[in-house]
Amino acid sequence: MGKRIIMQRRGKGSKTYRVNKKSFIYKIQYPPRLSGEGIVVELLASKAHTAPLAKIEYIKENKKSYFYVPAFKGMQEGQKINFESKEVKDGNIMKVADIPVKTPIHCIESRTGDGGKLMKSAGSSAMISRIVGDSIYVLLPSKKEKKLNGKCRAIVGVVAGHGRLDKPILKAGKKHHMKKSKNKLWPRTSACKMNAIDHPFGSGRGKVPKSRIAKRNSAPGQKVGLIRPKRTGKKK
Image 1 (tube, helix red, strand yellow):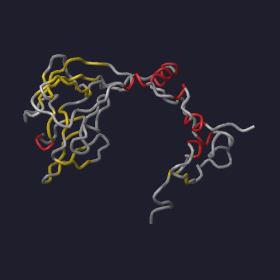
Image 2 (cartoon, rainbow, N blue to C red; image 1 turned 60 degrees about the vertical axis):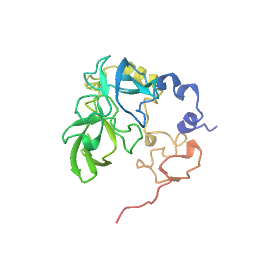
Image 3 (cartoon, rainbow, N blue to C red; image 1 turned 45 degrees about the vertical axis):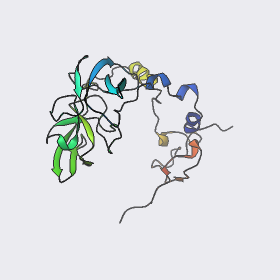
Image 4 (cartoon, helix red, strand yellow; image 1 turned 90 degrees about the vertical axis):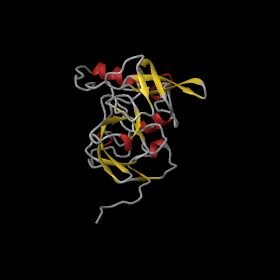
């Protein structure tokens, strides 16, 4: 009798593989429009994020409002964060066009007004590499440059929590509990190491995964290999 392969079991959404909603109660991004300054009300620890989070209070339409961003290295509760100043100070939210070259930044907007999409994990930061006209080039940790609009915003400084990966995980149980808290599948078995019944790439006959093209609307268990690729074959 056959059985469902692992992607089908995960796609069902059972308790084993369902995301804990309580872990993701904080939405990390700053509002599209900010003016004046804010204050760091509280530093928080979130199960779903590697870096500590900062709860920042600001005034919106004469009312107190809040948003959450990754805390930077050296942040303190009660610290003031400026949204419009051109002073390069850790924690200030500035347009990348106003930030000097070789300044470390994080929580960078990929598009103007999206609230910050890049560099939000613990200890991460990018650097302003060069300015060409209205375009700003940011050097990422992968040594690749990303072109940004000068109106995109970023936070000056480095995300707190650096050194998170320095200490080795000595026991499998430690890794187990870390992954379980985020509902991640661990340990992950390579598909070509499985039996043929467990995965389309299984069996020892061919160690190289077979080229398969799955349809976009196919079931979770069928989505293996190439998922609706634009092209196949070796580029000439």
